[in-house]
Length: 603
Image (cartoon, rainbow, N blue to C red; front, side):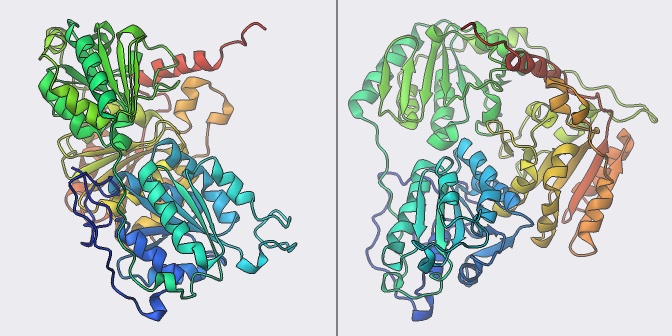
C-alpha cells in the first residue's frame, strides 16, 4: 500500500507505510496552510511540525548545551514526544528501530561529543537503508568564520569535523546557521531522507531555534515527493527478457532479499510468488519482509546454514530470481554459496540484471515484479521437489528435571509465544541463527541488523521499535556480551512504560566471535543481570525479572511474562552452557573464519 507523505490527516502510529513515496493517484496538495502565532513561527517549531507531519511522533534525544533551546521547541509541539535516552549511541539505535516500524525515525544530540557518539548508529542505519533524521545542536551562528575555539571540539577553530564524519554515513548534510535559508535546508534534508531511504544530518545553530522568522509563519505545506517511475521501454524490455528466461526453466525459484524494504516491493514480490507457483525463500537479512505463511514458502536461503532442504532446492534450480539481494561475506557464509551467475536474475531497486546477458536500468523493482507476474507460466516443479524431500523438523528433547536448560529447548518454547501481536528483535550473535529458525505467524514483526552487525544494537532498537509499534509486544534476544555494551537504556524503556520481553542469553562471552576465532578476549566478566535491571528499575515503573536454569523454570517464566506480567517489562536471564550453540553458528563460524584468514594473493 502506498501512503501519502505528510497528508493533512495525522498519521496513525501503527502505520508501517509512513515515509513511502506517494502513488500517482494520490490527491494533490492544497497550497494553502494555516497561519501560526509569532511565538510558534520559529525554526525549532518548524522542525517539530515537519517531523510530526511525516509520521515521527517520538524523537530520541540526549541533551547538551548546544541543543537545549531546540529541545524546548520540539517538546512544545503537541504531536511530538521526547524520549530521553541514556547515551547517544542508544538514541541512534532507537531511531533505527523506530524507522524499521514507522518508516522514518529521528534523534537529537549535541555538537561533536554527541554527534561523534551517535555516528556508529547512523552508519548502521545507512547500511540498512533506513531514513533516520539526525539533528545536532551546533555552535552559535556568530562563531562560524572566526578563530574562536569552542568546547566540545578537538581544540581547533574548525567546526567542520562533525560534518566531515557524517558525510560518509548520510545522504545529505545541512548546516543551518542562517535563518534566511533554514526553511529550504530543513525541507531538503528531510525530503532527501525519505526519497533515498538513508539517514541525513542537520546541524542547527544553538541561537537560532527560538527566533521567529517569516518563512515559518504558516504551517508547512505537506511534502509532495514526485514518485519515481520506470522507463516504460526499459521496463517492457526487462520483463520480456526475464519472462523468456524463466519460462524456459524447468524448476525456477525466487528468493527475497533485504532491499525489498527500500524498494517497497514486498506486495509485488508476494503477487509474483502467488501467480508464478515458484518455491519462495528469503535471504537471512530479509526475514520478516516476506510473509512466511505463503503456501510455497520453503524457509531461509543462507548457503550451508539454510533452513533444512531449502539450499538444496535453491542451488539445484535451473533459474533463480533474487529480489533485492546483498551478497556479503556474512550472507554468503564466507563466499561459499553454490550459485551460478548464468542462472540468476538479480533485481535491485532500480536495475535488473539477467544472467550473463542484458542489464536494464531505470526499472523499479516494484513495477518489474508486478509486470512479470502477468507474463510467467505457472511452474510449481521446484516446490513439488521440495515436498518430496522435506522431512519435518524434529522437536528438541525435553530437559530432565535437573538437566541444565539448552538453547534449542528455549526456542521451542519461544515459537509458541509468537503471534501477529508480537515482533522479534534478534541481536548479533547466536540469536541470529536461532531466531532464523522461528516460523513467523502472519503479522509478526522481525528485525535484526545483519549488514552492519554492531553488537549491542538490539537494546536501543527494542526501545525504538516498541515506541513506534505500540500494537505489538517486542520479544528481544540479546547475548550477555552485547547487553554489556548498551544495557543502560532498559531504563528508558521503563520511563516510556514499554512492556517488551527481553531474553538475556547468559553463556559467559562473545559466542559468535568464539566460533570465528577463539581467544581469552572473548570471555567476559559475568554480571548479575537481573540484579542490574532491578537496580535500574528502582521501584519506578513496571518491571519483572527472573533467572532460569531449567526448562520448568523457563515455562513458568514465560507463562508469567505473557499473562500476569503482560503489562510489565519482563527480563528473563537464561543461563546456558558456554558451548551451547546452534549447529548453524558452528558451520557459519568456520566458513567465515576461513574467509577472514585467506592469505594475501601473490604479488
